[in-house]
Structures are given as C-alpha cells and as structure tokens.
Image 1 (tube, helix red, strand yellow):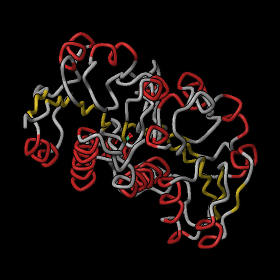
Image 2: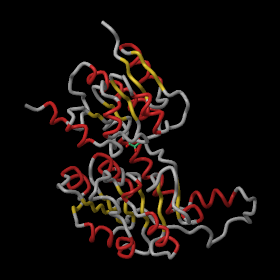
Image 3: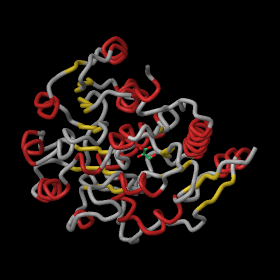
Image 4: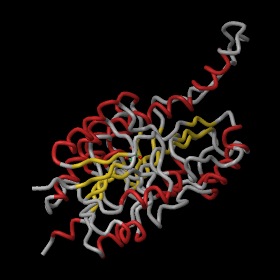
Length: 325
Ligand code: DGY
C-alpha cells in the first residue's frame, strides 16, 4: 500500500519526524522559520495530513487548498490558530498536544514570577555593567512571595499545576474558572472567586485561559486599576488575553508593580514601549521549551496525525463530535 504524504510546517524534535517517516512520505520545512502564507498554501496542496504549528493560520483557505488532507495535528496545546468550527463543518479532525507541557509551562510561570518580583533580570543586567559597588541596603528591593496571595485565572491543567507548586511558599490561592476545582480546594484550601475579587486581592495574578472571543483582552486597564499597586501579572497563556497597550500604560504609571510575559498580543512583535520598561520580564514564548516537553509534543502530534491518516479518532482530538453518532 502506498504511504500517505504528510507535511510538517517547520522543524520539530527529530523523534516526531522519525515516527512519521516510518509510515509516511514526509515533506518538511527545513528552514528554521515560519512559512509565508504562499509557501504554506503551496506545500499543503495534495497532502494527506498536516502537522502544523501555532504560528500557522489554518483556515478555510487552507482547507480549500489541501483538499486531500485527512486531518491537522497542531504541535501545541492551544489551537486558536485553527478555525476549528470551519474544520468541523467540513468533517476534518484537528488535534493538539495536552498534558505533556503542563509542568514545563507551570514551571516557567513560576520562573517568571520569581524573575519579576525579585528583579532577577534587572539585577543581572546591572551586574554585567561592572558598576556594582558592593552590598547595599536599598538595592533591588522586590516583592515578597511566601505567604502572599496567588490568583490563578483559569484553573485547567496548567493553572492547576501552577497553583499546586505554590505549596512550598504557603500561599493563599484564589482561582477563577467555570467549574469548581476539587483538587485545588482540597489540597490547597483554594477558593473559587469572581475575577473582580481575584484581581483585587492577589499579589500575583497568573493567566492560564485559552484564547477565545470572551477571553480576548480579559486583562485590560479596568483590571490593572483594580489590582494592588504592589501586584504582578504573569502571562504564559496567549498574548491577546492581555491588552498590551493598556499594560504598558499601567506599568509605566506603576499602577501595578510589574509583569512577566512569555506571550504577546502581536507575536512576534511587541507593542511599542514594552521593551523599554524595567518592571517587565520578557521571554519569547518558551514556556514549553524543555527537552522532554518538546519531544513529547512532537511524538503526540505525530501519533495524532497517524491516527487521523488511518481514519481513526486521534487521541487528542479537539473536535471529537466528528466521531460521535
Ligand atoms: C502551546 O502548546 O499552546 C504553547 O503555547 C507552546 O507550546
């Protein structure tokens, strides 16, 4: 039997490529850069399956071009880059990579929390100037962590992992979510509260919601005005959940103490003014960038795609209704 033809839109860890190569003819964008729209359209044509990234916009135009594609395996847990409703209408399965990047992302949220509140990046920049004159009582004073209140916006897998890791710092945990999180309530004595209460009472607000119409700009100037002036914002979810222009104003005016961002509203661009601020820590969407997470994401995406090529429901299907009846 002829092997199916698949396309991988950018280099991913070799384990995923090797797995697909066992069963498929694999074409791959070997240049380590996202494809242009035209290149993406050209390369998906005639393929039986596509392994795509969060930087690829997968929409009706792509589905019209890749008419033979039996499914799309997204190399990410978030899938806001894909028009899933349109895919479902056309009976095209879509998968993501949940679970394997939960701890890595939660760890990064903690790394950012520490970096911004203890002013690690600023201090590092200063040390490299060679101007340090020795220990000083008032130098680089930051925010306390132990015993403070951690507010988790979105208590799904990653939000839950972030909250659970606060145990060692004996923090009070507040969270918002559509449903009660039994693990957080039982293990941490956490409280499910309104967004209003969470932003008013938290010393650290960590965002873990998917990007949806209702979460776009969820964190905006009204939120910053209600947060404590000593509080920090951490975002490892999706950039457009935070209104970046309004964040710059809030940081500049010290309406909040600081922010640490791994994701940006207009990736890969940052809004003007953000990079000039000292009270912000910035990383390039690398929360899941550990060897194990990225390797397992590649294997998961490959396994999902193999299932779709066989006409089976992929293990991490985001439109499972296609298989119900
Ligand atoms: C995801 O998986 O959605 C992250 O943003 C990248 O790993």
